[in-house]
Image 1 (cartoon, rainbow, N blue to C red):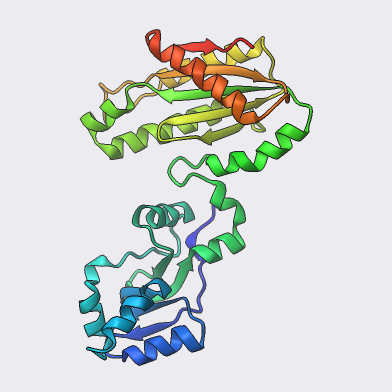
Image 2 (cartoon, helix red, strand yellow; image 1 turned 45 degrees about the horizontal axis):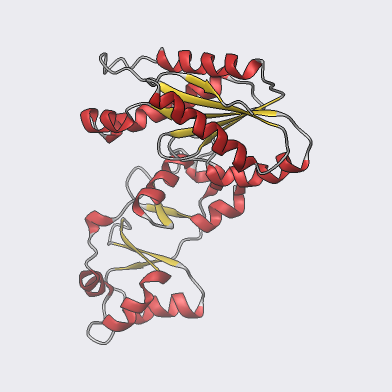
Length: 288
C-alpha cells in the first residue's frame, strides 16, 4: 500500500498571512516555485497558491500588498483548504485532487501543522503507473487500455473481451445517493478482479462500465466466464442496504489480433446492449 508520505516532498515553501505579495511573487518567479502554502501563526495551512493564480495576483497586487488581503480579494478563505495526512492512502489523495481539480495538497500532522506537500508532478515522477489507476475502484483506467493496446495488436494473441454495464445504475444513485453508487462501483470492481486470473485485465471504461481483457481465452470459455461474473456480481450483499441488489448486463467478443482492439470492444459493447434490450441481467455473446 502506497502512502502519502512515500510520495510527498518535505521541501515545502510557505509564507504567513502577514508576508507581502512581493515576497510571494519573488519565490514563484526567481526561485521557480510552483506552489506556496500560506500558514497562520501556528504553522497551520490556511490556503495554497500556485502558478495558475499568478495572473490574478498581478492584477490585485496594484491595490493590496499583504497576502491576507490577497486571499480575501481572491475569494479564498481558511475553510477552502484541503489537506491530507502522511499515513493516508495515496489513492485518497488522488481522489481529492480529481474531485476538486487541484494539483497540489498540503500534508499536515495530527496537530494540523504543515509537514510537506504532495503534487501531481511528484506523483507522476515517483509512481508513473498510478496515473493509469482509477482512484475510486483501484482498477486500471481507460488510459491504461492505450498502453496495452499496442502490445495486444502486435502480438498474435487470441483473447476474450467482456463489456460489463451496471443495470439501472442511475436509479441506484437517485434512490440511495452517489456515495452508495460509489460503493457499488467499488464492490463490483473488487468482485470482477477476484473472479478472474491475476494476469487478466480489469479496466473502468466509463461511468458504470468495465472492460475485462481475458488472455488465453477462446469461444468455449468466454460465455462460461461471462456467466460466472454475472452471477458473482448478482450475489453481492450490502449489509447497510439490505434491499439493494445489483445486476449487470455483459457482452462478450473473441478478438483474434486481426484489427484494432477498440473494434473488438465495440463488438462486445453492441452485444452488451442486446443483453440490455432483452431484459438485462444477461450475458450475450457476439458472434464473429
